[in-house]
Length: 298
Image (cartoon, rainbow, N blue to C red; front, side, top):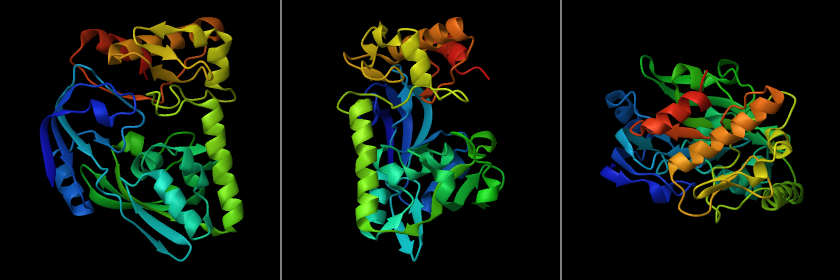
């Protein structure tokens, strides 16, 4: 298993910012992953780092990155995928077998573990629609298999977020369909993303805030003029107010300051508290600690 110390994380993150991580494990199998989790039960686990903001001052701890765990297997109408597999790759593989249900993943940069963890979804489809079960690791219970009814899925949440459960692999139930219809749906999803959202050529982490119940974070942010907001090298994307792009070597503090500015503008006008969808890892920078107390308050 590959193990790195004082690892420069910047190039791996979608935001293209971040400092050195004290120690990083890259497990390549479920057994290796479970062994690391037993030895480092508090270590945060990441996949493609597509919704992560890592402090420019780095992180003085251990991190696990799962991108080497990318195997998958079809069995009739079922497919089992390891946590580090990119959702887009699974969508493409399913389309080749004329199996429908994960077309929404084609436009996501994230991995299966993260998509199950947050019940990712788009365009009327979500993980919970096709989820069957997941092999997870619990710090006290070890390896456990969770069925759909155990996952407590709701909008952008699952039981994993509350019980420190780490997804190692997941099984999905797909539906046979024509290659034409599946391809058409995936192309619609890709076209929507291309027209409304920044490409990863403009470093970003996707939607910054979750949609509040019955409303759209993008609509609220646009109504308070957020498209004109910028801090340092970070600015709000001109075509969608719920995206931040790193346009000029932004630091993590720039991005957190901008997130706070966006949140406070909506709070002041509507008395609505936007909840971040972007996750943060840091702790060495006092200003970032202060901003996170505002942004991530429970």
